[in-house]
Image (cartoon, rainbow, N blue to C red; front, side, top):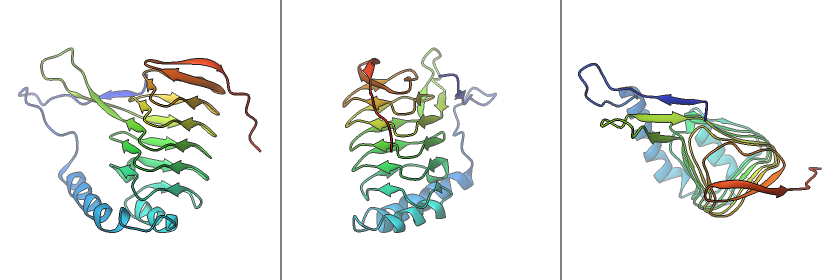
Amino acid sequence: MSNLRLHKMNQAGRTFSPWSMSSHLRLFCWNFVCAVLFRTSPRPLHAWRRFLLRLFGGDISRQVYIHPAAIVRMPWHLTMENGACLGDRCELYNLAHVTLKQYSTVAQHAYLCGGTHDFSTFESPLIVGEIVIGEHAFIGVKAMILPGIIIGKQAVIGAGSVVTKDMPEGMICVGNPCKPIKPRNYTPE
């Protein structure tokens, strides 16, 4: 979790939003567009959802698959490479950047959490961290990925796993906390 960033309080000791007023406005506009145009789009219209994510600053390749019920909190913090997939009702709470490398899959109801709080102080300031899902990696149903995590190339994260540290490439990883248990033995075509 070396890529975590702490958002500190102002000098008066008051908490504040780490985002500008323009970011709040952009988020408001995205939430409206998402509710009206993204989530209501028919399932086969991946190109339409790619267009909407790009319109709001997402770095989205030509051939990615995005279920209309997928939740992307901040499209401008999202990169999806060719063949990447966001499943039904998966959620990207991407307060920091989330990158899905080529042919990676985030299954239904998985949760990629780009933010947490530093509970060692009374103020509990926000901490954000980038998440990277490696090429041909698979994130299972209802898995949770915490901030600052890198999932290795061709890794599989089992259903319901909670990933608290980086996972190595080419391994099947399961549990809470998630741990590698065996090689995947997978060769992409």
